[in-house]
Length: 435
Image 1 (tube, rainbow, N blue to C red):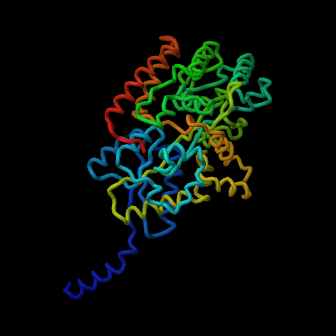
Image 2: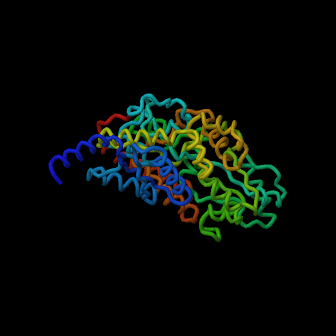
């Protein structure tokens, strides 16, 4: 090839450079039906335009994704977009590894985001660090068919009602009236939020790194002790007590009649129940005498990581814009059960031909649950090393369920060990201001 030809090729390449797609990576931590939906959205984005291409890479779990992202950032081969779950929020905010989305995209109407969804991921001054994505909250699932067999015609709305129903189910021969796995998110965080209870001082850490845990002194301690007693009575089962060995699978198979679970579990439950049982989903139960407050957002949000060029950032912004579209949020809700994150989507669903379709069942009730009256203690959890705290909570409370210690001792131990984690985190970020 002569010099003239080389020059011509170079000119052509320069002229078409803008038409070549900018490739970026998005790391996510979901599997199963949620992963299928994420891949479908990635494919739809890539097919919708030719300027950008997003490669969506599953990491198997939120925890693994978080660990790999930290290692990749240190090695300077990290993705542009990373999905992080709720418990890692403070760690990421103080890592200096991400760009707040509200700074990168000032023209987005961020106030359209559901208050309960955005509060977890925003600074003390209200700036969003990440774009809420697969947002869930805690809901109450019942097998209406099994409840009616036991003479229960209305879905319980209080814990007192749940236990009354559980006793009727047991009397009718049901071996698993209510099932839970005792997970921190369900039995402590979401319980505390909707009952207006603090998890830690400093409004769950939002007001300073010197917070301390309060979990052994609030009404949450009484609820956890109740779960132990109800299990002894045969009204509550843990995952290990079920034939399935997995509490969600036990409910979906009809083995258990009631459970508290993420809205993100709705699609699998509806599919399993199809043609066999009638499924109901509602807000999680309250104790009588307590005012209902907002539940926390669960799931995860998407962060933009630092250290990428302008073209990559533009591609990331385009993908985030795409995911925010009402039709994409509706697709995600219909295929996973995760709730919409912006207020306009509910209006679009209401005006559609499928407004009353079961596939949108979690949208209204989930948003309603997150939009209940808020307090300074129901914004979320802003505590360091919180992933490790969840592990401590599970370790200690499982000993209580096994009869190796009382639930009060378990929570006292959890508070002590949790505070040690907080002091380590405080020392690690000594002198740093909370965003």
